[in-house]
Structure formats: structure tokens, C-alpha cells
Image 1: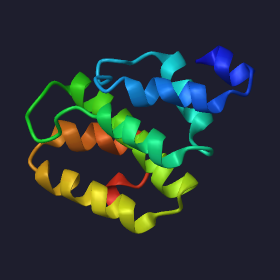
Image 2: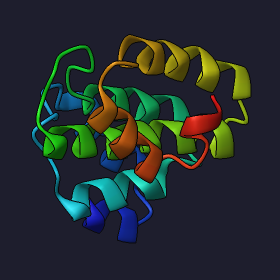
Image 3: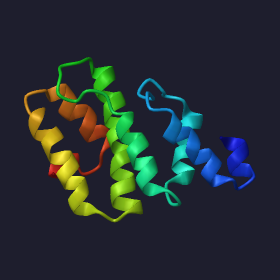
Image 4: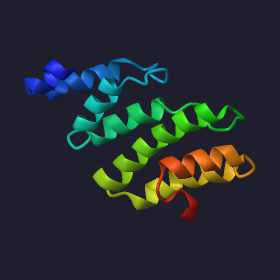
Length: 121
């Protein structure tokens, strides 16, 4: 992927994210840094990739799992708010997550750490 970016072959780099559907286990810095570089060129495709990386948000889990999911949702937030400028879509995506997990204080805590406006949603 990095070679494609270096060569400015952005569409070839993007194919990696479109081909790999089961990516929720990736936590590689390189994979996500490459995706971040492609956000401005292909926001919809990268947004779809980020959504695949989010685990199940409607179950009780460990604090570590909540933290990993919070980082994944923060990436979605960044694309929706900073790249696409879609505030309504962000709220539409985030509010059900927040309300479905109101009784999970560790969940709320980890999401508030990773997502700046989480408490004000």
C-alpha cells in the first residue's frame, strides 16, 4: 500500500481496502495511516472500511475492547465531520450507539476519552 501511495497510484492502494472485507482484527498502524492518507481522495470507501473495523457495540465487553471500538468510531467521526462535513450523519450514527450503551459506564468512559464531543451528544 505504501508503495502505491509513493507512486501516487491511489486507486491501487484503495483496492486493498475494498478487497479485504474481514479487517476488524487489524490494529496495524501502517494500515490505518494509509487509510488516513486516502480519506480526502476516497472518503466514502474509507468510511466503509472504518465501519468494517468496528466490533459489536451492543454487547458487554472488556474495557480494552471498548477502547479499541472507541478508536474505530473516532475514525468514522473524523471522516464524517472533517472530510465530508456531515454533522447530521455523525449524530445519526453515534446517538444510537450512545443510547444503546447508557448502562455501560466503562463503555461511556472509553468513548469519551477517544471522541471529543461524546459527552455532549
